[in-house]
Length: 366
Image (cartoon, rainbow, N blue to C red):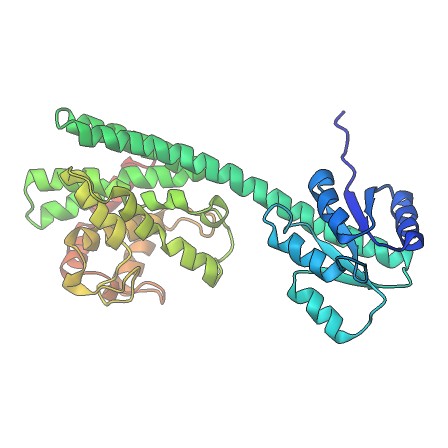
């Protein structure tokens, strides 16, 4: 059975009686602790002991509590440790000064055991949660970097050899599917369908077979930038906050940056699609608010294909809709989506070929 680690607390006070009192209180509640009699010793003990919480007296000789706290919060290795200032001073100015240098809380002498424990329990819980988030983000970042490296290796292969370009590019698509499935299985199916919708539209626009083939292989990379978005945002079931949505929108710029500078025509088109597939014909899209012909034709095609398939698919924050409902949303609007978002010529193609869109979705659902 795994042994539960006791929270570690550092007590810093030059008054021996106060130091002993705090030690007795913490020991009675099962905490592990160390003591320091001045600010310099506190900085050394913090490095050695790695406490989860510090009780820091303000009035000490040589280096007072304010200066000790300032140094702790300035150091990247210790700034995350909660600090409770212990003081006989009850004035407002002292508390404001403490908060400005990073103190997390205050208790006033004479020390009350119940108050000490409430402060300790609350701040240790906060630190435990912050440590968990830090570890989670580190693991996620490591995994994203590993999977990004997989894509970079595949892209490098494409640049190094023109022979077998198409086969290498298909391998890249397979690797992208692995990345997509890591965060969202539904997104992997979405990636496989998106190129077929775009090829259909390109054919109706009179494009050559080569140009249709290019958009088939280019458009599945439209959301590659989402590998740089935290999974907790991508898979969030509730509505995104304004800050989270602003971060989500950066996937367009991230994707274009990943694909930028490629010599392959497939990847050059993919860069345009990644950057512009959320730009809307009326100028209300992102990331740059482009409108009408300012938007690459590939982006104008991709947005309607992406919108159709996204509405048909289930997401953590929404259910899937049937074809008739999605057709009505795109052609008539629903408040959030309006026909003005799409190139009128491409919207007419969608109306005329909507049953073929439905057929593609049904045939390639898995």
